[in-house]
Amino acid sequence: MFDLNPVEMTKTILFAALTGACFTSIMYFFNITFGKVGSFLMLIFMVVQLAGSAGTYPVEISPSFVAKIHYYLPFTYTVNAFRSTICGGESIRQAVIVLIGLTIIFSILTILQFNHMARRKKQGKLVLLDWLEEKGVA
Image 1: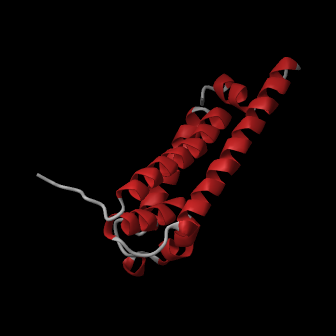
Image 2: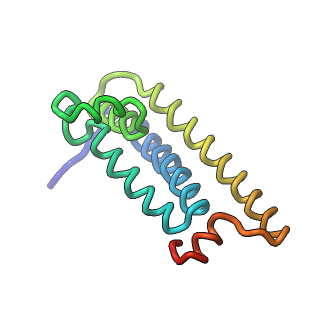
Image 3: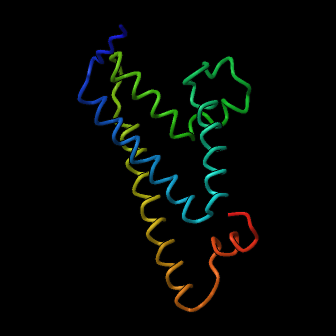
């Protein structure tokens, strides 16, 4: 049987929770803003993340596009941090800061979007999600 014993079990579990919160906040923002289109955009985002994070293949053997986006992808920080907590290695401080920052930013954007949508609906105006649903896209 496969036995996973991370070098730093507590950090691995806490970082997994932070990763879940971060990507949930990003996904939730896109879904409430764009509906089904947001889900599709998140699918594309996740595929780009998988290709560009060096989680599957090293950046050095990937297309040049991957090397250009590598350091801008949240998955890059996630993969590096999990490698560190599972196998031991460098500090995960930078990854924690990036993911906390993204979680805060997208949570604030979600709150602002909810407030904007509520205000527009109260005024009887269409919001983007309503317009997309009207067009049969969302």
